[in-house]
Image 1: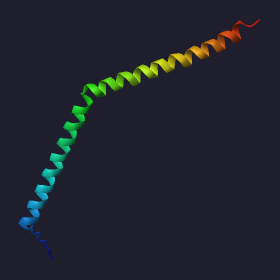
Image 2 (image 1 turned 90 degrees about the horizontal axis):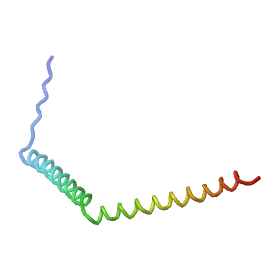
Image 3 (image 1 turned 135 degrees about the vertical axis):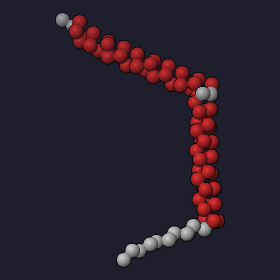
Image 4 (image 1 turned 60 degrees about the vertical axis):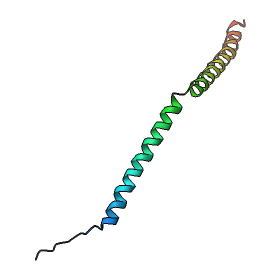
Length: 77
């Protein structure tokens, strides 16, 4: 005994599915364009330079403090 399932798709439902997918793709492309423009903006690059400079400066401060600590410990008789 063979059983056949017949699926019918309403034209309005099909249109809504296609429309929904297109709008998701459109939203995705809009988001990607916005992120790309923000990443390439001069404000973003300036902030990255500021953060990088602060990080390197703090690193050198910490290394200098530790350098003084071990140098004083080694140079004591």
